Amino acid sequence: MGEDYLRTLFSEVSNWGRWGADDQLGTLNLIDTAARLRGVASVRDGRTVSLSRPVTALTPAEADAAATEWGRPASLGLDNHGAGVPSEGFGVTSDSFAVSVHGATQTHLDALCHIFFDGRMYNGRPASEVPASGSTTNDISRIAGGVVTRGVLLDVPALRGGYVRADEPVRLTELEEAERRTGVEIAPGDALLIRLGRDLRWAAEGGQECEDATGETRLQGMHPEVLGWLRERDVGILVSDNGSDVTPPAYGFMLPIHIGTLVFLGCPLIDNADLEGLAAACAEVGRADFLFTVAPIPVPGATGSLVNPLAIV
Figure 1 (cartoon, one colour):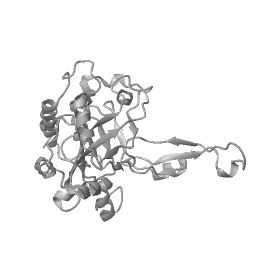
Figure 2: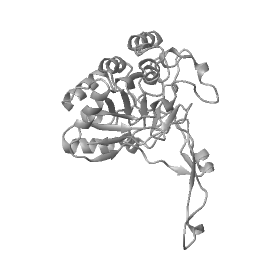
Figure 3: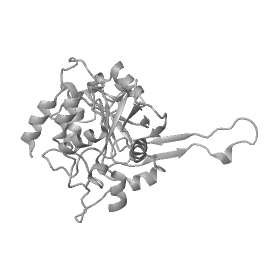
Figure 4: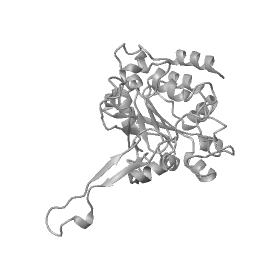
């Protein structure tokens, strides 16, 4: 499993040019009226489940102290507070946030300008189109209309009988078996949500960093071989309760799932979702499909956005 294998795989799954040379939506093009109505039809109970982790708000100094290579918590500033609110008439409090969108701390949506391979992003656009002032293409504002489609949860810990370990990535055969067990065939434009059991692992192994005996950070994820299956199923958007990729890199390139999806498939990612409540709800109602919705803050030029995805079962 090396660079040659991955280069061949990336070429095989590429959607460059599939929707035209000017396309900036990638697999979101697959979410058509039929996909949205399929999602609406999957609502039976009307229960709404948030898939976002709470934002840990700290002061700027606390956020700097808590920062790791996998991201930092949001900095929160209270511009005023309850003690200054008058006892009569109008009163107000206000917050200001500074946040690192990417990393393992926050639930966030990756835009297609977030990751590059050989100096190119989705649809072959060069890295030079992402200056310091913000990306001129493939940025998060392209998804301002949001995503509304059917979601399908593949619960790998339920299949394995335990959380995914960093040294045992999710394999293609497991996704196929997990799909079979749902009784639902993933259709073009569906949101695919893959539970790895991140919270279970953190509880068992000691927190976000999950360091091994050498002090190296090890995060759970999927084997690159699943990329061909994602292309075959024409997944519209991929959601994980971790970052989808195994770290440290074990396959020749850093973050091959991110490269394969964002750069070549043109498939947006949601990292660090909270899928525990959804897994419990799906187990309770005995089904794994639901209406999935998410919308980013449409900041022109931005590479991503904090989001609060919703599942309506």
